[in-house]
Amino acid sequence: MTTTVDIVGGDPTSDYALWLYYDAPNPCNYGRHLGKIKIDSSGHGHKVATAIGTSGQNDWIVFAENGNGFYDTSQIAHLGA
Image 1 (cartoon, rainbow, N blue to C red):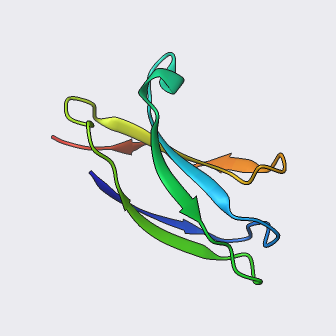
Image 2: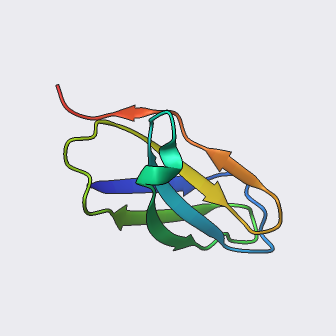
């Protein structure tokens, strides 16, 4: 699965780690690390990443965390019919 992440208003002092989680009762069991996203001086960042091993799961959330206690999650993305 390929996902595009855009951050607006991020903390420009550090990069954010990106994770893709399956929306489940215990989503940490299904995490896929997508790497880091660089935040520019205006607080914006953009990354396209591909995760493997996602078949059979339809509802996903992107989690972004900068290591300084700032984080956010996306809306749930539903894939499939």
